[in-house]
Amino acid sequence: MKRVVVGLSGGVDSSVAAYLLKEQGYEVIGMFMKNWHDDSVTLSHECPWLDDSNDAMIVAQHLGIPFQTIDLSQEYKERIVDYMFAEYRAGRTPNPDVLCNREIKFDIFLKAALKLGADFVATGHYARKAETDINGKKTYRLLAGKDPNKDQSYFLCQLTQAQLSKSLFPVGEWLKPDVRALAKKAGLATAEKKDSQGLCFIGKVHLPDFLQQQLEPKKGNVIEVPASSAIFKNNFEADDWAGLTQAYSFSTEAGKVVGEHNGAHFYTIGQRRGLNLGGFEKPLFVIGTDTEKNIIYTGMGENHPGLYRKGLFIPLPDVHWVRPDLKMKAGESQNYMARIRYRQPLEECTLHQKENGLYIIFNRPQRGVTPGQFAAWYTGDELIGSGIIH
Image 1 (cartoon, rainbow, N blue to C red):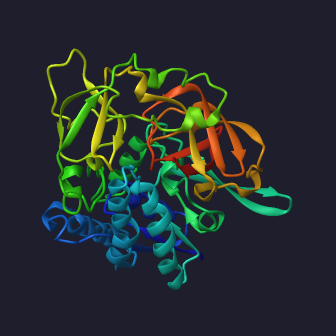
Image 2: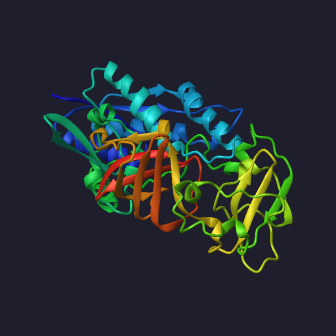
């Protein structure tokens, strides 16, 4: 009998994952990951980990499976939280959900499970895994979840073949309403529990409030850049890939000062809320940040050209192939579908591999291309690779 350690989060998806695996004849162990409890950064009552742990334990008792809690808070702080602060300080916008899967759930947690003699770890992600044979070698495929409204393959875009070989995603074949119906039928206490929003260690705290624990507020200018500015000229049709992928080179002369902000590192490309500026014909959106000079550049209206880019660049060390057998060589180009954020519809693009990294040039300009976020490319419903946007 194969042994599986299920990451029981206290939610309905992981609860049903454990139920399905037990029904399929696996030896199932439930394990809750305690990832954060630093009271100096966020108050403990704002993080529901204790309630979630209790819910996970109740589910395990109901299913008659062993249960334990593993404290990964130190590793989480070092690999996720500290990284987040460093990225925001540098003016980039990290994606901690992707990093948590790569660094915690399918690395440290996986290793802990293997020490318990597990053959696999399982989570409640809405994704699927398949196997294929490439030149006599077993290769694992990461597929989108069957529920198009819940597909979470994007969050798993940094997984390796070794990690996939030890991973199971039992609810990936299910639709969310059916998962809840099954949970209710099975008498699981989490059947009607609401899905968690955001990261546990932030809880209900507004992200800028959380960041201010380490990143000091600092007044700076908000500059509004007109859509007619020469900065945006020929940025969508040029043959020069670097020109299509580089961030706009704004200067203080690019527009006019229209207000103040509390720190450029609190804002991200495409952001509208939190500017607290009114009296304009159209809403203002962030189109650029300069953390060194502490300046935010904004554009008026959701169709402002500063919100759009035709391409993006991923430096070579940050290019990751879930399917290493499809890794491109320098000088090669390949058509794919890609997304630059969770739940964004896939967009047609061409990948160009160069010596220094990977250029992704989209057929249509993309809104809110954000340094620090992940781009992921697909063939059909299979995620092929990903990388951190530079």
